[in-house]
Image 1 (cartoon, one colour):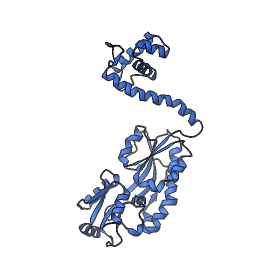
Image 2 (cartoon, one colour):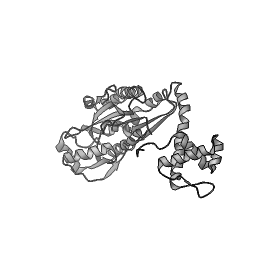
Image 3 (cartoon, one colour):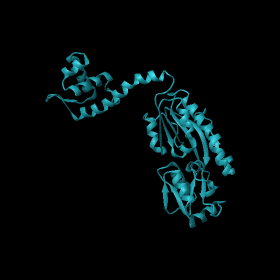
Image 4 (tube, one colour):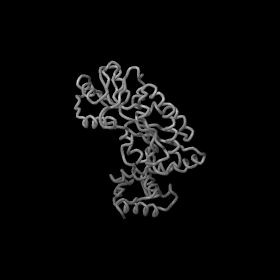
Length: 327
């Protein structure tokens, strides 16, 4: 048997757990409605396929070996999930998904809620939203703990996943209103010598991209404060003698009035951020495309006008994506 082959089926796990619960092969056989030799054979085959001893047969009732204890813990969860499949399929026939788990990058919560939540309630009976940093959810969608993930596009499309583009935006410089204007790289260098720089945490994609940009333009800025949320960074700038590098959507997410801020193009090499919707390929039919379109249209109708009214020059630098194009 291959090392990665599944060494059991659900019926053998059910027999194993029944023996665990009742202490003997005979008692398990009565509960399962089969003969004792049938249970004994099932357990023997399970031990052979897992290449381990699961029960300590020197004691009565039967005791579990360390390997048996591990299998009991995992088998209980597997069978519990398996027993939910039939009810879930019956519910799905009614037209709605019984559960939809959606991960979100932090900087889109204000932009897409509550409209997206209301919309998703029409396609799923129960919707779970998980906010946080991009890296924390990457494994979740691969391991099927999330169905959808709206995130920063910082990886190539992995096998088995589909990626739908929503929006692309530039990085910008944010300062209080009374700071000198930033028109070029020399102005940015002068600002960095006289005013404190507020950082995004290096655990965030924005934080890592900004640090790379600073190194490219030769700025080694002292550390003063850092935050892992757009609100933290933007509020620190608005209420202090400091500045930051962020994005228009991050600034919008903070909810802070632009009357307390000035936004300038980021000098130096081009630096942009793309946001996409990730889903497992073909598992939800057309739903990922439909949700991507809804989210893109919501950004276009609700968010971009608010941003562009306050920062007119940004309109030419924000690009909406085509969710129908997989890339």
